[in-house]
Length: 188
Image (cartoon, rainbow, N blue to C red; front, side, top):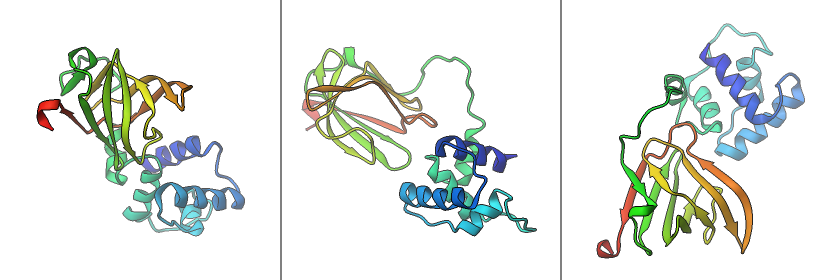
């Protein structure tokens, strides 16, 4: 059941069903580009049951596929199914724009290996000071009002080179922000 869910989510991200040899070739390249890891076409065909086999997929092979989806490994993917979609109050570490002073820096980390430093400019606006493995880029201006550990990063209006490039942006969608650190003037 978990492997079927994995296949379904990969096909959703990939943008089509994996049903032909050329699909497996294209998926191989997409996985290599996204993860930096190689998973042979023959392994992909066995996992998709395109080629019949009596053996079960190896943990490492499933982990590479899970990383393609943004998870740490296969175990992380399996555990993600236990995350609730119900409403709840935020009771984790929270940073709200209304409590910041201009020049404060918010440092965020989320999986896999993404980090971002944001300098508060006032009025829910932040300048990206550095971004590692993120779609955000240095010097982007984003609008956010709250950062909560364990929750996704939700931004509205992203400005790059004095142009609005997106009306919204979401990061850390599956597992949320892992760590949040506030660096104030007195901390530097």
